[in-house]
Structure formats: structure tokens, C-alpha cells
Length: 243
Image 1 (cartoon, rainbow, N blue to C red):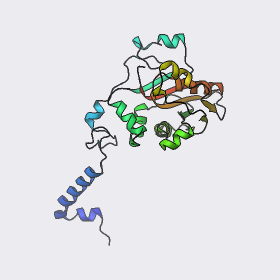
Image 2: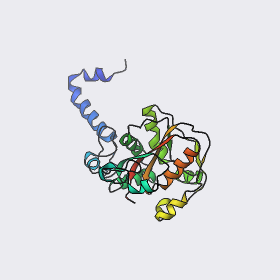
Image 3: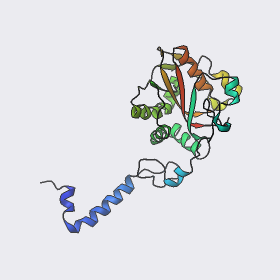
Image 4: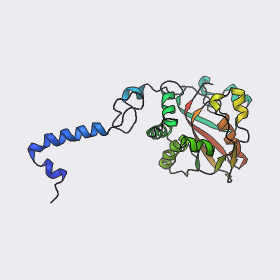
């Protein structure tokens, strides 16, 4: 009969050796922290406890529309003067060190374990009917190999049992990276960048992205969705910059 772990543990003199081996295996199998390289936590978080404590929280009082800092959490002056197409924004973190390093390691270093961590930080979803990750142009998707917004959105949608729309909207213009542009150029860069492939009549949609800077990309996508009938568009972003 093949020996089982229970049988082996039933032999008293073997128990210390098996326990030592199990502890060593668990340590070796534990992933490294994505920031400092030390062993990560045992709860599946790809960070050690010290680095997790260093992550910058979002603004304590933020505009509910764009998530920029706002006294008493009121709608900011910019959103009052120029209301965006989206209805709300929630950010899990401020875009500052060391969170900015983690975003880049997911985006360019293919540390996909971070996608699940970011999804957990964004949960729970608001009351929505559909989850839609920020689409990439096919050329950029081929170059990168994956869409980080999709990888973050997938566990969010699955945990909330909400449909995930992966092909409902296409990015039809391969616009220059937003990070390379000044603010005014960012706001015009995304015009006609998206095209809807279906109707969204009456649906409440959660848009998922990694970083929100001016909000130009999310605003352009929200306009596209509302032109196709969406009732509400809510942004869920890993991090919000201060422009």
C-alpha cells in the first residue's frame, strides 16, 4: 500500500523530519515580495507586511466624480465647471511611491500576481450590470502581450458575479501614450479613439483601469458608452494621480 502523509505522521520518530520538510517547502514555495524581494505574506498577497503598510492610501476627502482631493469630499470645481461623462470614480491608492513601482511591474514586468492584489483592493464593486476594462489598441496589445486592465477586472467581475465585457468596445486609434503628453494634449488625444460594438441601453457599467491622470481616457470611453445607451458609468482605478 502506498504510504500516505497520515501513515508517515503516525510513526513518531518521523514527525519532526516531516514537519521540518513541510515548513521548508512552504517557505520555498512562498512568492517573493514584488517590491523588496523578501518572502511575501502567507495569505496570497504578493507583498511582505512592511511593504504593504507603505502603500499610499487615496485622498481622505476626494471629489466623488473624479477622485481628486476635495474639501469635505464635495464635487470639485473642475467637475462642476466641466462635468465629465463618467458618474463617479473610486481609487484604491494614491499614485506615489511605492505604488507607482508596483503598477509598472505589473504593466511592463508581467508580475501578474499584482493584478489579483489590485482587484482585491478595489472590491467591492458598486451596483453595476457590467464590468468593462479599458481596452488597448491591438498593436499595443500584441507588443505587451496582455492588457493589465483586463487582468484586474477579471477577478473583480468573477467575485461579484457580474458579466465581464472584453470585446464590447474597441480602441480604434493607437494614440500616443498619455504619459508622454501635456494635459491639454491628453484631452484631445482620445477623440474618436473608441468605438462601441454593441448597445448598452440602460446599463450601469464599471470601467476598470490601472492609473487615472487627467481622466481623458476614461472620459472618452464613458462618452462612447453613453452614446450607446449606458445609463451610468463608474470608474474603478488602482491609483489616482494629482495631475
